[in-house]
Length: 379
Image (cartoon, rainbow, N blue to C red; front, side):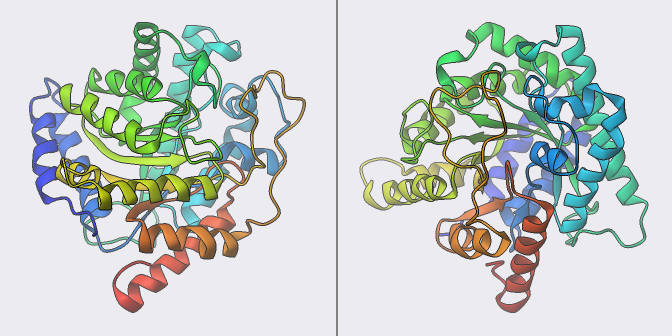
């Protein structure tokens, strides 16, 4: 059963119409375009890959303290960062994500620096998109529902450590911190992506911060998983999504998609399969799939290429980058995972996280476009 979006789009648009911002009509327009491309379109929406690891692959020194954030904090790497954004767009991505992941007080930035660097990250990404728009032939494949070649998603990562549900900030502090980051990026992004969330509680903080932003922007929420396909907190994916939907419905937060990222692709398959299995077996109450459909929320997946990550891992205590797997080249990633997610597990958004390169994105984009042209399914 493929998810569609007409009911959802109307319901979600009402959230934007009540915004007090003079920019609410612009936000509604962006939501409409994204909804058509993601929920209603016959194809698949393609995200970029792992910006941080790609920066290191292109020669930026590996600073274990700030990791990818140094590409924003140090102006000497701004052009390199823009080149990475360009590469993903040229590969066929429909959206690039701001390099704001890792810009936190936990790594040593002051609150003022966090705001400043988030502004810079969003500005640099927007500059690339604006430059793309000036080309007579944009590098990405467009559809009639998409008047511009690509979008900018504002990355909202963990505020303390990736993969560590035991280290998240208290609720009010987390919401306030995310709010400052969102306000800094809001003028240059089309939507926000709360990514690598290790628990529902962590995603609630980012979701509530987006709700209070002006203008209100769409939100995509993505969870990282353990080897069993559970959230890093140990919660089953089906339970986590149910709690997220309850929370966002209660607070009228416009979520466009729920995704899984920065995990082994095998783990993502387990999580997606559990959602499908729960849908097939649950007849006593509205199924999770039905709730997603009614709210216009689609599923997405963008795995990493890293070796398995220990539960107690921290960036500060790591001496070197996590090793990369040798069995996930572009064709393997597509053939063994992406194609299955799209064809059998109702995934409408795909891309990559750490270690997924522009070459990976180019391969899956071309395969998805070829499949769409051949059979109209994008698979």
